[in-house]
Length: 89
Image (cartoon, rainbow, N blue to C red; front, side, top):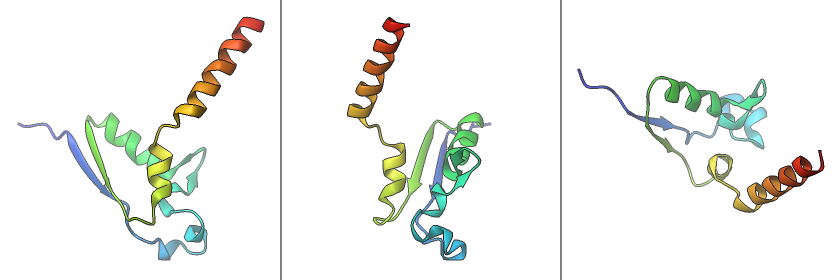
């Protein structure tokens, strides 16, 4: 039996059923507890053994792309601050 390792998750809708909550924030990024809902979906897919995840999105949903993107400048600043705090402590 072949194992499923790829998942395609559609996130391109406008979230009209979630209005007015989804007017400023895509429905996938609406918080559920301490994280956006899409984060839970991705975590569950990984726990299920999915190795490749494709999010099918819309050009107006750049916030989803930004959420999963790496901000190298911020990462460097946080690492430097953590290093300095570690040295002081």
